[in-house]
Figure 1 (spheres, helix red, strand yellow):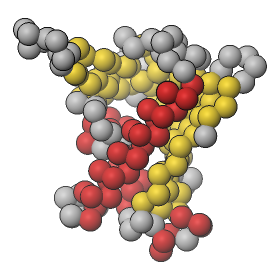
Figure 2 (tube, helix red, strand yellow; figure 1 turned 60 degrees about the vertical axis):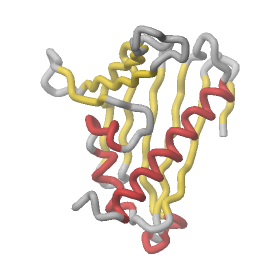
Figure 3 (tube, one colour; figure 1 turned 180 degrees about the horizontal axis):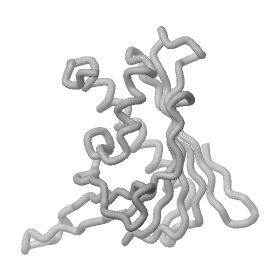
Length: 170
C-alpha cells in the first residue's frame, strides 16, 4: 500500500507472510544489518563501512547489472550507503536511512519489522517493510512501491527456503 502526501513525501508499506518460520527464527537474520545480500534479491554486496563515529553503523549495499547492449562485458553498479538508526530487539524492528547513493534517492528512511502472524508465532510470521522517501526522479510512487514489495517477497522466500533447508543454524 502506498500513499502520496501533500508535502511531496512518498510513504509505503509492504508485508510478506512466511508460512513456517517463527518470528524468533527470522529476526536474527534481518537484525544482522550488514548481511542483507544473503536475503535481498539482486543485492550482490553488503558490508559495514568505516565511520568516524564508532557508535554508528553504516553499510555499503550494491548490485550490478550487465546492460543488454554491452559488448565490453562491463556492468553497471548501483550502490547505497545506509545508516542504521534504531534496533529494537524486543519489538523485532530496525530502521535505517540512505545517506548517499548513485540511483537518485534524496531522502529515504525505512523500517523493517518481524511480527508473529495473527499474534501467534505458531502460524509463521510476517515481515513488514515501510518507508518514507522524497520522490525519485524517473520513478512513480507505484513503481517504487512495487520494487519494495517485490524485493520483500523475494527476501521472505530466500529466508524461508534457507530456514527450511537448514542452511541457517541459529
